[in-house]
Length: 159
Length: 159
Length: 159
Length: 159
Image (cartoon, rainbow over all chains, first blue to last red; front, top):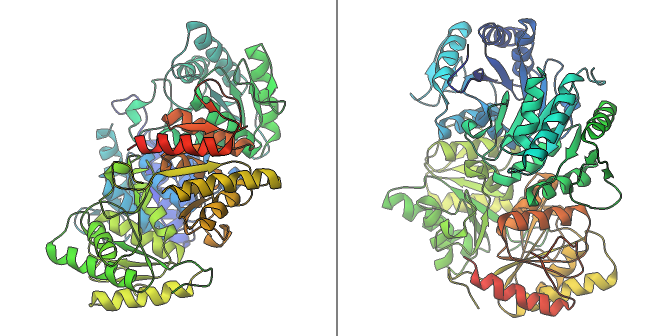
């Protein structure tokens, strides 16, 4: 359940701060899989995809970390165990990427795009489920569970 | 055991990256108290005081977070559960302060001083055990356990 | 020559750190136009497009600012007047965007993509000359001089 | 007039955001000396000491850079030529230090203290004129002009 450093794999789940019920549930499904398989769910700590992912993980008894834009922990959603308030605004996106061992990207706007770009810059493994198309370096899958599984495998190879 | 937001109080324990056995044990004692009383231990994730604090918390079955200067999780000490790699160098000190609900400062050099300064800038509660003397806004105590107790009380009032 | 705040318009020119002679010259042409028309050229301070842009501006007697990834000013190219060393690695990209009044994007890889994403997040005007296609919010032009002209006009409307 | 890299020495002048007329004038005197002797004045871009320093430099025909806490350039004082908006709040202090070749510290509160701490962490030359007493590593002088002179000399040895 752990990677080489003895720590749990950290999977960032990224995507829109506001989203449909369908996408929210998809994020929850991924979060649940990660938690059930010994991973930590990391996200931007706010609503939409971020909340869905954290909720899924918590419902499965997992651990969640949210790196938020403001300095105010109260801005994090209720499913975040550990809030890292940055006060950096959207610049916190780079910290989300840096703290992840692998990333699952769901549909989102430009904030999500910036996280995907930073993942590519830093060579972090990233799996896309219907997110921005940015070339062949990003693996595209349709099934959220398959994305979660691949992300966990890639994360375990990190560190 | 929890503060108003339903999250555990987060106590940052700051101080030198290299220190005497005596200070290491003092940090461990504080970390242990925090963990035993339902708090999370936060630190800069490296050696010395940071390692002592994390070790004490882990030996008491607690949870630890380390916000480190580099982008490389492997730089964190082995007692850190959740590593937040920043790639910001010593600028990560401000993130340690922002993520804390209260801070216990042990002796350290200028990095510690910068964290104490940021704590004062942001109005975060800070208790000093033999750390830098910076005026009356910082409560000074001699006994590490007393510092830990006060920090936990002040942290619970935050958020 | 100045915008409402009395300051010169700041045009960020972004793109690959290594590029063809053709793209280098294109960046220089944009830098020259900005300088000749009273603007300041801002960039990431390194090679390729960044160097071309700064060189063009300097050859026209203009002023250049480079916000660089490292803490070491010596890493900036020789055409940068004012070096802002960050020590943040690619996270400095967000600072390039925040310091710009308008942005001209030339072809680049994922670092450039992250800057374009941040520009879109923050609503900064951005003109693309053969850069990443990210939807209708980014104005596409073929001629670098036209891009420079549009960027200067949009920058003057900022602040 | 220039240091080895061919760039002008950059002197950060730090201190309180609100100050007495006497301190404001002292900051202006330092800014003027720096500008008259070929240096660039860098500061946090807001009021008090920061404004005095920038004003002195501009009145002597010099160049000024302000690295500000917010993302909004309009928050900078009117004597700043080049505004670097960060959106990082007081965390921008570390960027002020990193962009300086030498630092003159005038009296200030905890923000100033954090900048002095970061200067000490990074080994940047720092001259104190009645600022925080932090040990022998900081040279103390009484005369602002002497501080400016020493800072320019030390800055020229940097890079």
